[in-house]
Length: 542
Image 1 (cartoon, rainbow, N blue to C red):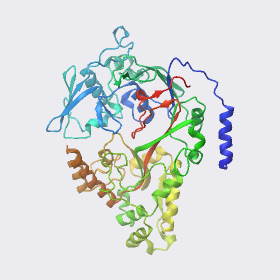
Image 2: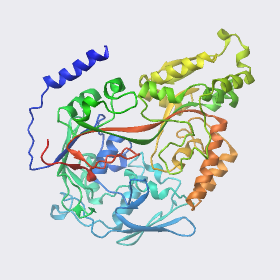
Image 3: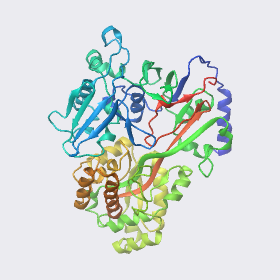
Image 4: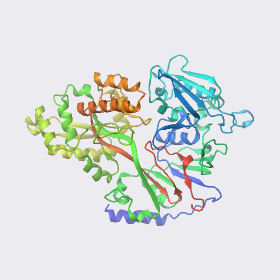
């Protein structure tokens, strides 16, 4: 459809769907859309964005992250790590209450204590729970008595070996604190009967349709002179179609929408990636780096049998052979950051383009490297075809790259597959060449560099990359307490990845968020976690 007709239809739908719903202005309710369904409100299953966001509204972790992704107190008011780097002592707040619930005596929430932390952490490791988050502790904490209660307000964690990013891991929603009474009362139904310490508690959940939360009047966190949260309630809608959700935002039925349908990019943004003027007086647009690296990867075990992919010069040629800057400008209106450094994304504290030298578009150098492998000596129609497995959502990127490779004499094709199918092929090792993405579980470069650690299976090491020097640096970095020294080790590892080229770096993602004009002082974050406790909404607007 021509853009002009699309715009008329877009505006027409708004006019035909005028908002007739009236809201109680005595309560300030934050309304947002979650395009993917929530499958569980149990923190042990907070494995995807939809579950993580909902769990974050209802529970707390010992540690949380500030705007710069640095650890700061939450349920734990302070902590220290001993000289060995293996014993972590956390001092808990003594004014935190669980939500009122029928699982407690008199249906009144009780005070959170150290034994609740111990219970919650052992539960993550319990094989009968089968939590997908068990990896946060497995292999990292001692097998015997890894979690210890010193007294009601002090907890200790015993690590097998020094692991400096462990403090950041404790900020993950998997590590939320739950009361044993709720697990004992609700069992498997705890997924729909959450009991936490968080800024909100559950009122109603109609799965796949809506979720309603109310403000926890006993919440312990204070910002300035105000007790959090700022809003009285939260209403979550589950509208799978992002175009429809955006219309709801324009109509005043939603306050917040994250992301947009790629087909809307020309309608929404200028060539410079700014929100078009016709929307600026109706909604706000925010963007920030997102800790997600998009890439194309090689299974090096399979590549070892290929006369060309087995040579790093060929893989380097593929990296030099397309224009990342033009690709982002063409397909995403410049939203995101071209991956001109390494696998570790822009937005992390250790990111440094001066320390790590990646790939830029250089077709002359790409051809030189291709000639060194003998690939261009073959007639074009006899050159092996490089088959890329990707999903439909990323086919535009694949086509852009393949066109530029073809100009260099490289034969390649795209095989469309469902995301789940591609992931399974990456896991079982049947895909030679695939599109992947790696989103941060916690804001530390180690979370990306573990993808290439030779002792790791797939996941996360989908490329089957093995390099002894890299592995030694990785082990050394885990125990390095000095942050700047640790960053130097990270940069050495990153340069090895650039030089060996087990992957083709595409771009570092960006968070794109739209809010109603009634939302103010909003700040997005690079982990793309919606911290509703900080949301401020004007009372006199819908």
